[in-house]
Image (cartoon, rainbow, N blue to C red):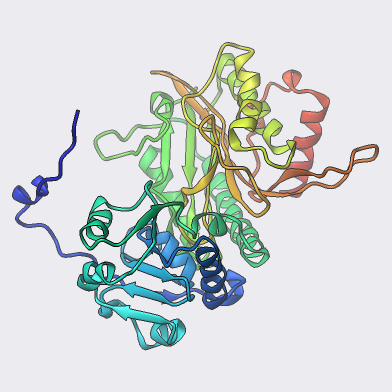
Amino acid sequence: IRLRPCDNLIDRIWPDRPAPPQGAIRVYPEELAGETHGEKRARLAAGLKEAVQEAAVLTLPDSIAWLLNIRGSDIPRNPVPHAFAVLHDTGQLTLYVDAEKLSDEVRAHLGDEVLIRPANAFGPGLNSLTGPVRLDKSSVPLWVAKQLEEAAVPLVWGDDPCILPKARKTQAEIAATRTAHIRDGAALCQFLAWYDAQPPGTITEIDVVTRLETERRATNELLDISFDTIAGSGPHGALAHYRVTEKTNRTLQDGDLLVLDGGGQYIDGTTDITRTLPVGTPGADERAAFTRVLQGMIAMSRARWPKGLAGRDLDILARYPLWLADQDYAHGTGHGVGVHLCVHEGPQRLSRAGEVALEPGMIVSNEPGYYREGAFGIRIENLVVVTEAELLPGGDQTGKLCFETINFVPIDRRLIETDMLTGAERDWLNAYHATC
């Protein structure tokens, strides 16, 4: 099969295509970022210079937002701007963005080393580079590479220079995220108190979504939800990414399980948490499967591992209790999460496909599950931060990494078969609930 470039065929059938979004860009506080955008640009530019690369083209909105300590409002649920940028080996940056998005405050924040150009100047700007220019093959549009090739500008393939630094959160970002999760956890606990007072057969999935989002907004700190809330009851819970609609809305019935997965966008962090809740009296199969999922989540939470391992090396920890019962789940165990950025962030992940080594400061979700088609679903999710592990008595001096859990919302004990838990698992769960 040979691919050849052609006109965008979608344009022929989309005559009423809306104009690009014009959401305002705002400054992200330096005290929450933990580093100025000038310091970030200088650090990444030094890497370009060392690699003998004149510039790097940035096309991912969250990379640009992180690098410049700005946030946008062009994409619902994701506080990022539509823009392109070129980072030069001098530390200067050219930002291609519609000027209407920029207030005087934002312009002052960006300063003299960030040249603001209109979005339609991006092509000519690429043509004016001398190269070599770094492009990330996993995210850059083909059009960018074609522009450089036609202008005879040398290009090299390499990682977006923001990806790893963005994933390694600063101490300020981690502290801010902890605060956001405590606030969000309190809102979820308020929801749980309401939920437990509702008899089976009296509320729907939409009622659940509405109430949870109401509790988050009652914090007076919520800027947006971080993704459309998942509230799948009974057979809908077996759809890992189910989204309720008026057409699919279902009343919660006695014996159902409810998979509730949601999160918020706060100025100090992006949250994501899943709890599986019983409706009335759960069945024995549901309780046993829930306990295995819980055991996998606990195993990942307690993990200690040598530096240099990636998510693929740890993924088995969450699956092993399920494997012993000939059960499994078809999604990864965890994804990276940003700080008031995207709720799904790379390059780190807990998955068989996770090849990037886990490093201190990375935030990932820990969310094993089990899904029985047409019957029920189970998922338990906390967010965890990679951190340096304390040296244990009698241990060696090589150093290990571990996870710090940052979500604190009770796990429903009505679904736990306590006889299946080991003493260490009980201790972890009791300590977790004591912290909650």
